Length: 297
Image 1 (cartoon, rainbow, N blue to C red):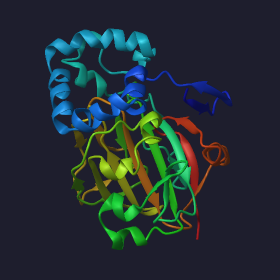
Image 2: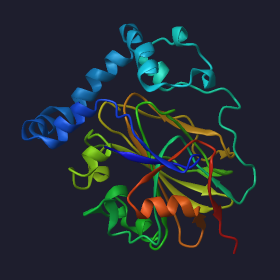
Image 3: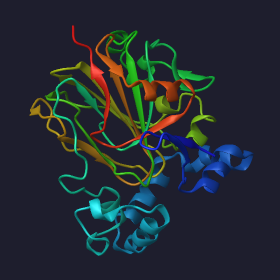
């Protein structure tokens, strides 16, 4: 059972995990673990499923998915019948005012929908994946020099479930660098997998870039693929100015994760999120929701 904190109700909710029995088998049983290593984590498995999700035949999955996870379609631009395939639905765009956000330059907004965990005063050589499992920022980026700049900083881990809005956005005005693509496996990023797969983020396919923001300094942004996420689609243009709230990109089908690294003394995260993170509990947030403040120096 995965508990997630709801900031609005100040209550814990049990996550409705898509494919829970499948995940428990893949990462919790001897046979499942073997199958995951031999085939499921491989690019071919994700590629084949991705082709199906790009096909017209996958449209039949859309309405049952909406019903099972109670997705609010009043926020979505298209009607269920208007999607060309399941991936079109999965990367659905929302109506303009579905995710309002603060224009106050000191407010840190969430870059997307998902379940948020925050690490502060980080040791870049021992980042917590989940209790008793760690990894290093230099391994994640493949860049020791850049990683060293974020010692003592803040790390935001935003886990997106299959039912979430799967587009991610810039949190401030600024300029983003070209992305660095790192090939890897396609493990699930669900907590069921995280607690059973050492250095999972460092093993999966991922892309990272540096966002030079006006109010929060240089931020490392990392998009991590997962099982059935064959495509991380970047829609921004490197080197061009962007504004707070502009889209950076989106994921195709599957659960996925975005990770953000802030330098020391640049942000202060809201106390309720920090409290839940210290308990090992994720906090449910939506794109545009204020989650912290800039440190004025």
